[in-house]
Length: 116
Image 1 (cartoon, one colour):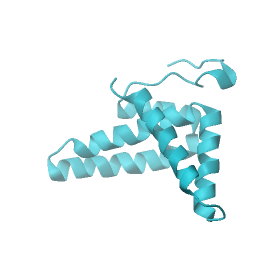
Image 2: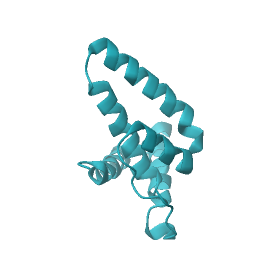
Image 3: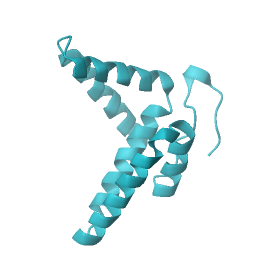
Image 4: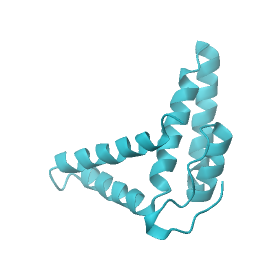
């Protein structure tokens, strides 16, 4: 995984492989403060997978963090998402347009990650 220098026109990093280790490395590069959350989520997903004898919790972990990376590796998109979430959280404006745009951002990020 090598960094790109496209500025606001391209991603900070290429989309990593959809494995816990590759996603952890990507998060460490683009949002290092989120590593504790990723580690906690992975521990919970692994434990839940063992208890339920299902890979579904691990698939959900990979999906969640892949979408996070797809959003965060585009700084303008990540900043816009945070602005929209603030609009919804504060309740100062009618949130339906912000919610629709949040959904569109997440769907676009999801489309960039699946299938791989």
